[in-house]
Image (cartoon, rainbow, N blue to C red; front, side, top):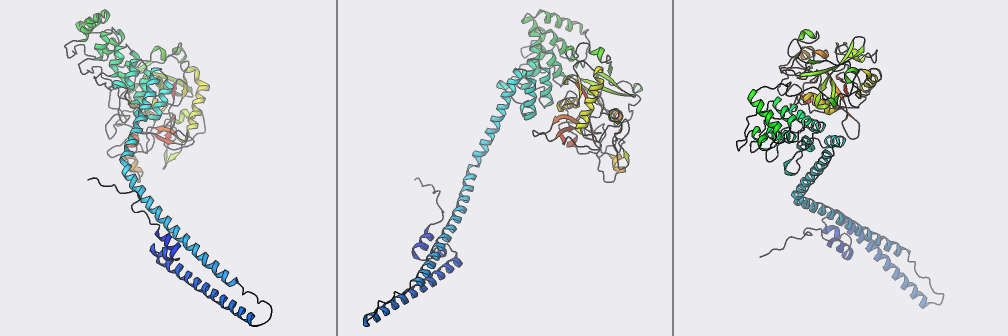
Length: 588
């Protein structure tokens, strides 16, 4: 049998009290609403007024008949009618009580209806909660799909500014979006040979080894299109040169089948295995033969026989390509020498020899740009291939900043000086840092490559420098406590009783240390881990109230704040004893 669903009106307040007060007498409705005090008050008041009115009416009638009787038994003028004033006043008062009583009952009824309505609304909302959650999820999915579509179109048109804007707004969600058939933005940018886009995506957290449902990585796609510049970026970002698809196909197979000679050379230099076979047993050489890729066939066969290659290795070629250095760049920059960042300690007197302010991993070959700024002060920059810029090897020091503002003082903390010439400059706002860059451009632009300028690093450039080509969580790698860097530690705790410090770590400094002793990563860039926070060029929020800062500082021991993806922020006018900056030489 079917049962009738309970009506939405079940439990609704009754209108009966209103009718009782209107028809029976004032106060009856209040008593029905269980408002006894109000009911007794209105009832008693109405009864008293009614009795008074009835008494006045009776007196008026007796007075009228008395006067009429006297007139009828005597000869004289018609007597005047007794006054109605007292009766009218009492009648008006009774009506007023009646109206106030009805209003009181009706207002009480409305309050009960409001409570009932709220209760019903809560019940309705609770019943709709699953649907609301589903709708919210659908809305988020639709938004992600919309952002993904916009990113897809921007990559196809190679609109770098649009790509950067989408990534800044959507972050990892956009960088890790999945297009049709499981293709990611990294696949698309790699196949179109867009190294800048690859760098932007990697900085936003995209996976260099992302796979399609068939198991193909962005390096597969780039190799098949001979997209060498994108391949270099991917390899530096940690792409697996021997990645195998679901059927065992490697990037070298694709490059061989397409006769992509430059891609083949790069993959071999990066350590690709020429003997990797597909599920059908075919090696890259077989693919070259089957696709009549004669040049690839000869190259692969020669290498398999000789096992030698007379082109310069390394896998991750750190030298900037021709396009990155405009014509006459070497002449204008003073021909910056190419040197190994891990040079012997004897070549740099300021280089520390003691742990823990030294990285544990082997350094890479890097290009160094040196810019003298007078009075013995020199700015050094390291070429950041994936970011296409020169990034400051060190944080800007007090000595270098005082070339701009002679009277600047970074002060001291608890009696420990922050003002040494080789210590990083602090107590500088974002505006101060930007002004320093303008001063450099006005006075030393002839000492850097043509078309490049001095400026603050963008957040993406800073992150790329800190990540060193992989997805490490910290500037030094993955381990904790850190192997190097200047943080709040045992030395600080011994001198400052209220300091906590990183357990089991001691860098030997209470406050900031000389920049040459702040510890370098594999690219030879110092101070990305601790020492002082560093201003970045970007706004933190869409309202443009705060600027981004990165890197942690000597007074920090919080693990989360030392992560690369930790975005610090401050108002651009802020000056702090643990906040400085470094400079880059890049495109405007």
